[in-house]
Length: 293
Image 1 (cartoon, rainbow, N blue to C red):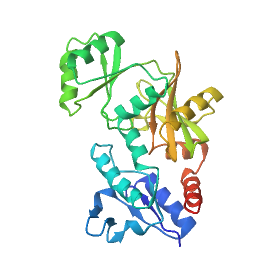
Image 2 (image 1 turned 45 degrees about the vertical axis):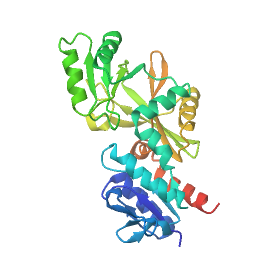
Image 3 (image 1 turned 180 degrees about the vertical axis):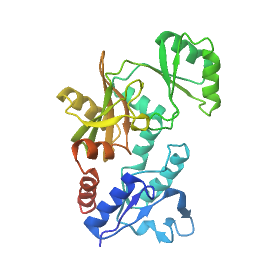
């Protein structure tokens, strides 16, 4: 029996879907929650509920935790150790880490020449204020977040702009990520790839009055057929990270298509609800093929 575990969250939709797909294909079921994993130097391995993870044929990383956090980088280091000890981990934990941190993701995309909304990264409140004055409106984004949680829109005409920026920093955002707010066409795109191959796309459509399209804020998924140019742009962005599975967030703005981010852990539900694509089963097939190579 091939033993493939899934790193995820018990009860989480995508984690459970992935675990069920593995069980269907292999007869083996193991959902690993990283907050319960321990490393023992005496035995040079990781354990989860008494199971030696070093004995597995592979691990599929679906969710590192319920909310993105700097602590997840330490969890990825644990998985990197396991990978170095010979367990196949999908995707490479080092590649996931470059996506998980918004600063690292942004700088990697820009080094690759990928167009993005104009962005300022700084620890200096005055520099952040100057950026907002120049942009007119800006979105302040925590470095570790998903579905727009913790993001704030700030405007240049706010008489208490500096105080608002200071309050945002005091929430734990020591590095200020300031991105020009661009006019959205009411939707953005999630474009999915599996081992570099384009799988499909979906749109997140914003509800009336919302500045973002996330489903947490009432957005909905719709089927999408992006142009060849947009798929090619997303493919170039995804290739910079070397992930086994990834979803690239693209917006079709007035200045042309731009990439918001590359995600190593998202996209499942959008593909399923909008296109009927069972990404979990496709990933398991791909992992089994890789394990047997």
